[in-house]
Image (cartoon, rainbow, N blue to C red):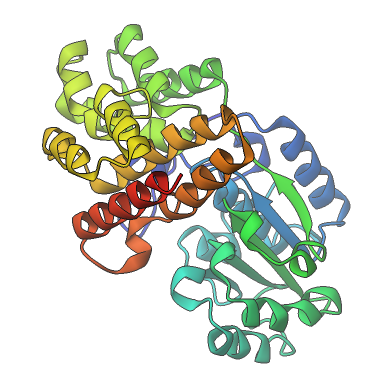
Length: 351
């Protein structure tokens, strides 16, 4: 059930104003909704949660919903129906709560940052019932930082809750994973995404074309955040013509089935780096990160078709390179992508 809410901080794009704020508002994820709803209503939320699953499927949003349920001042204890009106709820919704801390682990995932964070855990919350620490991109926690968190997670304080969110849990240490209650978030069905997008159009008073909605859903591949982002682009373009929409979304919709991506994959498989450069000229208007993700998809599919362990090992080494987000390097995206393609072609030549 979608509900539109404006924010006081000026961030009133579609993704923000239609972000779920209660368990009942979450689209899909029925098992997860039941788990969270029951734990909040019964006061049995685990003190350390790990939300896993693809990007854009509701992990961080659900973490905030848990925080709202724990902190709502109107309820005598945790609740699955926060009022969203008390000072505590408002501060969480506006992301300025002193007791609900969201940590971007990509920037603050080292031992020193975590050491500083854990040093303050013993102190009581400033304005709320609990301290809630939400760590996004938790897979970027360094090994030392994970070790430092083990004791607070396992023998922590009754007033502290941790919620870790990641789309790459395999990068976390087993000792860390074992100390968290894991909940996995999956992509949504096409029908659920269509319903979500048409509801938004209805709320916004927009005349839409069902064929365009279906195309957006196809491109989004089950990811709510991507679907809403694409819908906003289509609304801004305003023609609601399929050719125009396809052209508009080409940067986002390119995938492993794209002709040029398939050609890049074939040439990389042959170790033909020079041929890859020729194909790249045809993709000059496509973001490098989009090309990387699509190429990783090509080799992921190829891995499932491997005919020998030796071939699988080579492709696995390729995926180690191609599944790392370019932005993490801090270097010019095109330079990183071309260098990665050279490394991949070298791996595939070593038969």
